[in-house]
Length: 196
Image 1: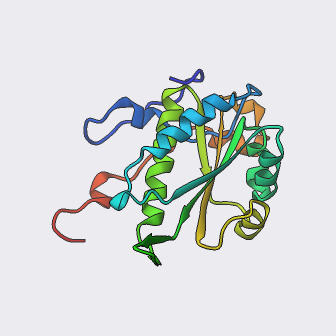
Image 2: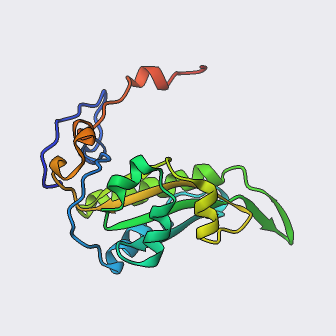
């Protein structure tokens, strides 16, 4: 488990503790992440389930201090950039929106679903390795696509900040109260038997 204690979450039904312990803080220490460590997290994402094994998930990453990291950080919304640029790594999650079969290109309806599975695999592997992962939707997709030379048949989904958990007082004052694991609605609100 990460170094800073967090309030205990309680599930409605028995699940592995990893799902309750993993959360998305914003405070990072200045500990760097080695490329090999990041590649381990991306390797877990590569092995995520994929419809018909099309594997549309795509990632662009940068380690703090390199040019790729800077290009990703510049596309973040100001409210995210203030804390995310202190992360050890930034990873853009995207997906290829088309598939080619027998020379015919067609839309891949499951591309975003598969990218979501890949992101979760990355997040859980990060947690298991003692890192935190915080995914953000607050970024300029057009700016990011241009800066990262994204192909036209791809879609951007999120930017993930990765690093070592830091103390809340490393954050600007306004962000500190949010540094606790969030709860979830009851399972009965999101899962119904037989119909909506």
